[in-house]
Amino acid sequence: MGILAWILIGLFAGIIAKMLMPGKDPGGIIVTILIGIAGGLLGGWLGKVIFGVDSVDGFFEISTWVAAIVGSLILLGVFRLFRSARH
Image (tube, rainbow, N blue to C red; front, side, top):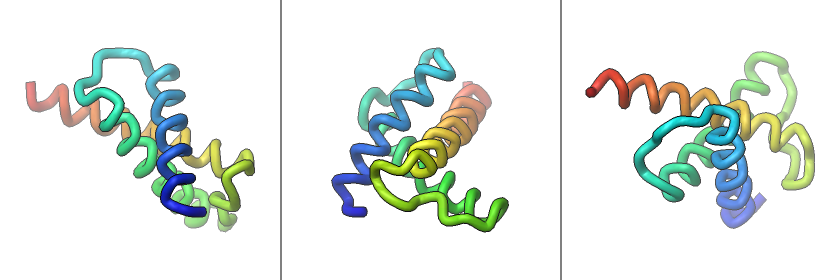
């Protein structure tokens, strides 16, 4: 997949993660995209390590989207945990 595909998956995975975990998060759309992209990478890595499968097959594969969303949820939770610890 190209960089544009990762950005699109990251955007949508980050938005879906924010919809599943509503709340106030600073940063706006840029942070959403970055959390989504990193979440996709994290989800793909976790899928490979835990289940022994290649979770990031292609743009239209459901496993790619599930991995990206799960990874985004994990990163959003960690982001909120560190953000609340600072305040």
